[in-house]
Amino acid sequence: MEEQPAPQSESGRTTVALVFGGRSAEHAISCATAASVLRAIDRDRYDVVPIGITREGQWVQVADDPAALEITAGRLPEVPDTGNTVVLPLGTGSNTVTVTPPGQVPQALAEVDVVFPLLHGPFGEDGTIQGLLELADIRYVGCGVLASAAMMDKHIMKVLFANAGLPVGPYTVITDLQWRRDKAAALDAAHALSFPVFVKPARAGSSVGITKVADPADLEAAVETARAHDPKVVIEAGIVGRELECGVLGGHGTDGPRVSEIGEIVVSGAHHFYDFEAKYLDEANVALSCPADVPDTVRDEIQRIAAVAFEAAGCEGISRVDCFLTESGEVLLNEINTMPGFTPFSMYPQVWAASGVSYPELIDELISLALERRTGLR
Image 1 (cartoon, rainbow, N blue to C red):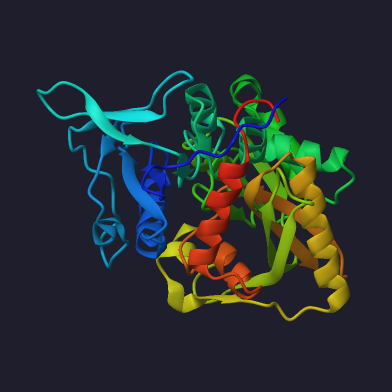
Image 2: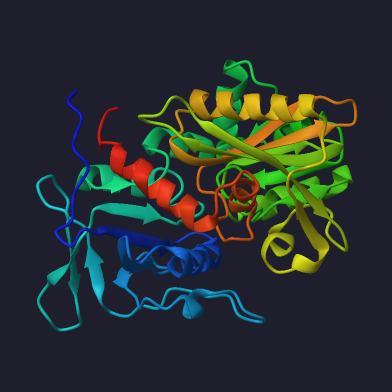
């Protein structure tokens, strides 16, 4: 297939649409991510078009105001319904995004060269917006439809990793049908795991809906908590060890993915694991250490696993690979995040900063990778 040329703007600047918010439980985190990118992106190189998706799923034009999108004490940000409805082109031949102010006819908002989807969780990170952008023939940052969907589903993810010969920990899955048809049998499979276990929505992120269960008697309630976010639930045996993470950057048109230095998450205080509050609301009791203090052999093995997992999943552009280092020195692959936390204080930008790539440079490289990659089959 013939390679498409990268778009060129008459102004000499690339027009980037930042899309954020969304219908998932991670709406506020997506807004905070957008605030960080709005502050850091090089305005001499890029014209920026902020597009918010409300909690109800409405696409709207929002102000280019990072302060309104930041997490502050006592307030989680959200996309307001401004009434200025935004619509993407749904076909090839045009990259003009339109906006319809209340009571007015549609008008051109911008000719968008590339979309940077800063969406976390379902209805964004899971291949849905990627499919929409493919239909619109608009280039975008990050993984394509299949990799986004498969890596969002912790069950399918583990199946793909195991098939690629990568080490994963013990787990079981409870589907919606299994839970409704025979709850006792579904719980029996989970009871066979070593406790404590982690009960997770299969297709959520930012540790939303996750419960650490030490007492088997609490398992059913934990499953119901996870099911409030996703009818399919993954239950993982608890791994005693350290949580280590590696950033991956690259994909189409490169010599292979680049891997970062290794980072480590250390959680203290009242948190039993790296949950939503620890990630975003309680920085005092969370330390992100990078480079992690690990032997060279461990660093090399995690970087190897990260690159193999990235390619096995068909990832492109951006991903963060999370691993466990057990007390016996074994490295186990936990998961890939195809749209990891992306504020300057999140692990993905931090591991790249430790590898010599600053936050603005990281934004620039991700956009460049997206512009080099065609839409469609590749």
